[in-house]
Image (cartoon, rainbow, N blue to C red; front, side, top):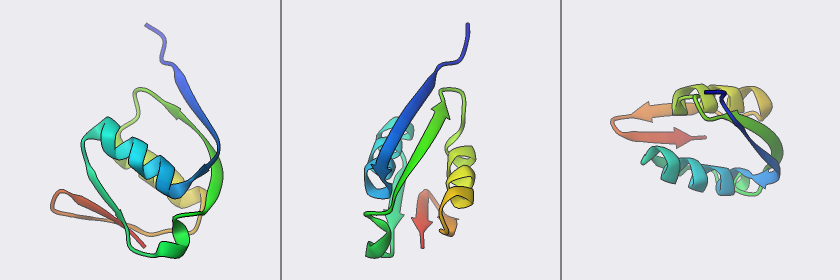
Length: 75
């Protein structure tokens, strides 16, 4: 079965984190409110893990992601 891509154009970081939180049933917290409205384009494959997606986001925009227990913290 081929993997499908999900394209997000001009999505805010807050919107994407909300979608990822639901998709992976994860608690993702953006600590710096200035990052909420950061906009970018991203293409995700359905077979990617949350860790892989967050690593890719760190390459697109200057954020730091830390995993603490069951939470992901974005600074």
